[in-house]
Length: 336
Image (cartoon, rainbow, N blue to C red; front, side, top):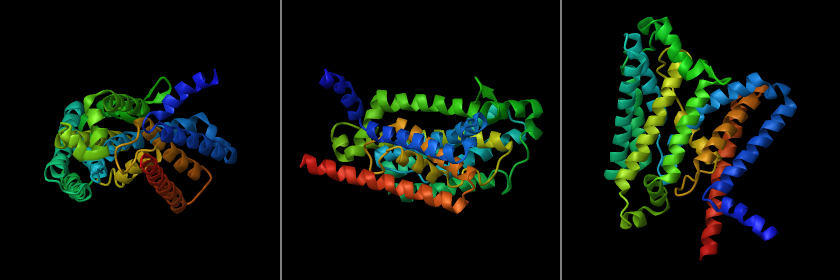
């Protein structure tokens, strides 16, 4: 009887990346409880609401970066595309463009960057670090130039207070079922890309080229097309976060999204997404984003210095990658 009961559990943890995701969720619970015992306000409904809203940005960009990490690539342009999205949409709205039209134009610009990244990495075979470093500066430069090297005015000055409030409410300040809309936006993005990664042929191809690009190519997988799709997912996620930051500030800030590419890597790696490619689940990215934000929130609540916060999170990221390397080495030895 006990053997039969263990079989479903073993199958559950046999899912590629599931064990790492569950470890991240367990770590989240431990971290939350430890901070809560030190500072009871961590458990307050208001703080929980704020944590959910803040982690949503990390979750969305983490999803985009996770797609690329699974393919064995990386996107350093992600944070700059976030800023470009915020600046394009805000600038257009300050000139009276309807929020929907402004968002579509920003989306098109972001996807162009995604396609360029795909061409450079998948077709021209440039190292992803170099290719996306170039587009990182390019996207940030576009964000600067779109409004003549200055932050925008309030979006309400162009589209009116009612439309401006509606935009800000939808993406940041409003609530649905008692939870900030930002979190629901993140949940919708998560569900869509979780399904695409786990239930579609494109998702299988993403894992395949991350495990062994040459073998995947011999099996008929288009490495170029799959890589481009992954970069377009990253660009789309950056676009969404750009709208969230625009709604949060009520304007466009030229430095919006600064360092977000690193936050995205951290969310994925903490959740068990392997930077070496081929393994990981978006469920882990969800846990990783929650761990990141809970650490940041908890350290703030107990009055820790910003420098200490960065050190703690940096150590955790390095430990997570080191653990992944050790596990992979062990797996290879068993196979041999």
